[in-house]
Image (cartoon, rainbow, N blue to C red; front, side, top):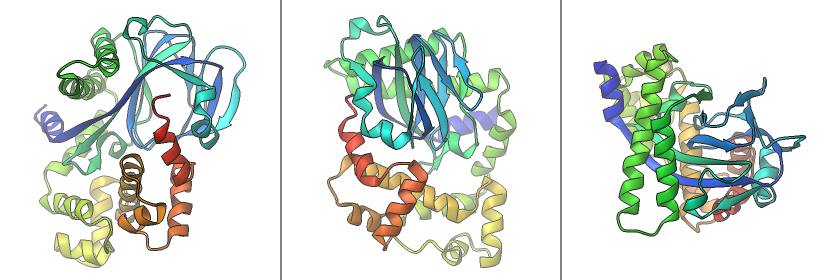
Length: 307
């Protein structure tokens, strides 16, 4: 249990957004993808996910770790199938946001969701690093209540709103981890993940990558940071994390690019350069391969997040 407490204590949790959505028409989104973790509570209607169309029952919650590609279907009846890019571009045709706190959980064909980051040492996407698949959380009244409270706060304009949302988002992360432990889901991965807290060289690599995304992050540089040989650093990193360092670096760079698209007005070229891509065309190709949507359309999506 001590290792699990260390995991929880090390996590940096950041609230991203919360919405109560009314489904305007049934839609199946192929290759759905988001950088952030999200938890969705189904109020009415139908939600299924995965290749085998697992069903989320009314009142249950679907947890989707950041960085996972999957098919998600929203709504009852025959659904229109679209790819992630088309959905993001025409989101307003399928979803309508409810902004009345009194109607949370009361609308037909509706769900609520909260999206958030949870990072180890403010660097590693925790749930993604576990390689946890999407899963359904059943019959957790406390978690459902917490989601509803965040939605109500998000729709309000009262003192302390941001602080309450921050605290409640941290509660969501703790409840998800507790659910994993209680139901013995992915416990082996959680134990393995504790290696992050036992090897200072790996922590040094994470910190260096975070602080130098726009610079040289070759294996030679990482080897110097960890004080191991260049030939060994890739094997060492993968042994502890399950991913090779260059794949991890690309994910971090793309995640940072999404953050800049969301919060700045910098050009696509400038953002690519800032996160380590000198060739803008290559950056755009890799971005679309990872997220299934061009960087420019991702920016448009962020401007429509009130939908």
